[in-house]
Length: 370
Image 1 (cartoon, rainbow, N blue to C red):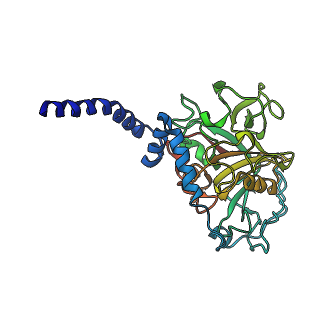
Image 2: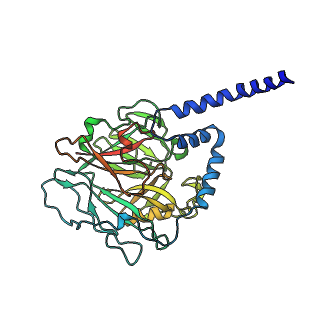
Image 3: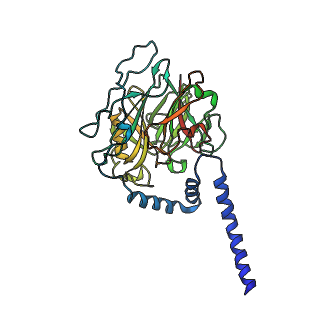
């Protein structure tokens, strides 16, 4: 009996050792994710995707945002008077008009653009504001940013784990480049969930898929958003392409089917009716970028916000509180412009503004002064 007992113990140890080694190695990988996030991702990548998705769906279904309530401090803090015209010899886009809020009566700061971050040749290159996404969940505010590509150069950075491989532009953002760093924000889903591809530095990590929403950057650092094969295509001046699902805004309107998630075009993980952290990016007719992110958003509400911000085409980026990020950078000491301090687009974003200055796990986008 005693010998059998130790045989059973030995068998358990032998069987568990590979699992323990795999899990331990996953936890030890380079990157910024905490152990809780890494544990969930390990389960997902080792046959437990269905369990993780079902658990997430149950959790969010039973923890939807509260109804009513006071807005977050992004809408209660003092707001500088908007600048509707700028006299400058530097070429730049016109300052965007303020946004009409979804909720009436509007709060004093709601939809009012204000300059943010460091200027470029003395001109604001970014404006931010916030909107409450609906009249029911009034304690929530969605952050919105408007960025001028005539003043800013966009670069796609690989994370230290995703998409994998070695890259010239890879996290963290190098210290010598931080003197020109203005903003940075998250990319899309993990590639296996994105229904799209990844191209950068002349390398294809995953083939680009026709019809997929695509964030495309040319060799001059000019970004755009469009449907691959229709609005954007491969050419000699394409520097990088990041695809994610299907467009959520097209021709200046939310695309049909968002509410019902027709054919699962916008992912199956949470379902588009669940109100969770979401992020998205779009392009205006003038070529400006608009970004939106916030808690308590459905895919349809995200699309409506990007349309309100002026997007003619837009795509959803990553979702959930761990992955939705937008940071604004400035240098507190003008004599050391490379020593930057980041702030969040909305105070309730979970990640630290120093994230992209470290060995960030996932790919992301950074914008620098031209």
